[in-house]
Length: 202
Image (cartoon, rainbow, N blue to C red):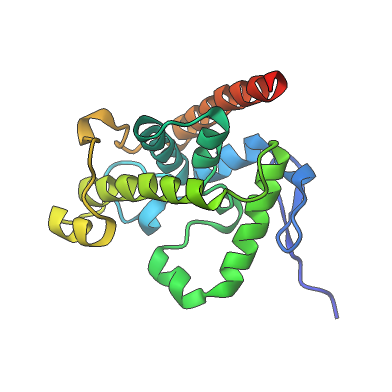
């Protein structure tokens, strides 16, 4: 009996093993391409285009940077906070709760491979993860109210009340996949260059 295939072929030609992912098989081009084509909110958003995980990641990193004292490494981890979804898709939170531990195990292994590929700690430190999650909830509030049909009262119940950030300052209008992909790759490249420079100077 043939073993079930546990890898995905990427457009770069890499074969990424989902159960034991190697940092050597992680490529920025694959991450940017994949995240730009994964829809947030299961695609239940207004606009001519899906609101992609790539655009969400840019939004979270922007909010995180504006509301925290942080370095390039911190910002990279904020930008990559949903990077595993380029392989496993964006599962909405209620379904994650139903699926349970198996999803989290795969997600953590992919996070580790992505981080190690780009010279980051295998997993985001707890305190930093909490600060990124706070920015994530702010982004989710605006996505929910502007794109996903939530009332402000309903969104506050699930995500809290944003402070210090207003809708006018955010890139939240859904972009075509090619634009979200390009902007994600450009932001990553800029942060990575800063991260490398800082590491060399340390």
